[in-house]
Image (cartoon, rainbow over all chains, first blue to last red; front, side, top):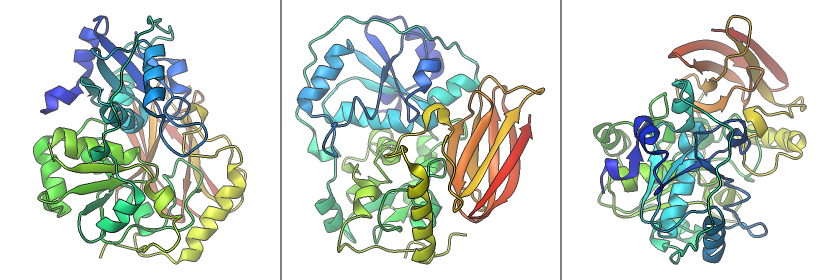
Length: 280
Length: 122
């Protein structure tokens, strides 16, 4: 898999947004953004209402994912192009879902909604109608998802990458600063985790840095051992999906998991080790 | 700024946020990109408006950087050009991004219980 298999630029999208086999999907942290304007022919997925179980803290299950995609008119053979706000955080999260449930052809729009908007490209409010499909999902691919016990067991053994901002890593903030400071019971990070903020993988316009720059960042600057398996986490798993995308999809690392329980789970567990301050 | 923090400070931030958060449960961004609830006196709020020739730009983003220049958060500007961050005591930079490659940086200080307001003209 190479960069061109998983990433498209805005010109590509403009040239293919009327193709019958291409489905543009906007997934935003701010779930009202789509309603104010979106790329023509794009449909919307709500990361919370559509992709989360309404009762348990978990994803929609396989059947739920099949129902969702069938109802939105996405078929197994479609090329799904995801994009969203906040530098594609939640689009990367959705990308990871599509991979978890085995969708073959899924891509991210490099730079997401922000780059599109800042380049003053066309935005519309018309919502496309797509005929219903019969989507068939695979069983969840557990090689892409880390659960809490595996994370605790990985301390000191695997690469743990904390992709939150330095202020969240050290324990100064509990959430990104555009949100009220809520959530986990304790601040800090998982012992032995390295702090490589997701933002270091992106340019100011939200596009991903070059493969060479990314390799230098993770292997060189951060000192990750690419011979080991890796688990990425953040607060709720969306920024770490962005880093999972970088490590697994762009750099082709074979064993990278996203821990979607992330700090909101780990920082509330009883009896697990936590470090405060800089990485040791 | 990145030094280890005593847990008391973190707990202070948590407590005040929980009082203020109300309906802002979970993790989604506030509707429109700008948090609407900011009533607690214990928070370190940085907020403001961006204008271009006196009116809000059609599109734009506000990014918060810490004093090491690291990305902390980014929000799309509201329809009125507004933005709001929940920070912590210290020095921060607000970087505005707007169409046409326009960027503007403003350095501010924040503290708990204080609302730091900015008017950014681009």
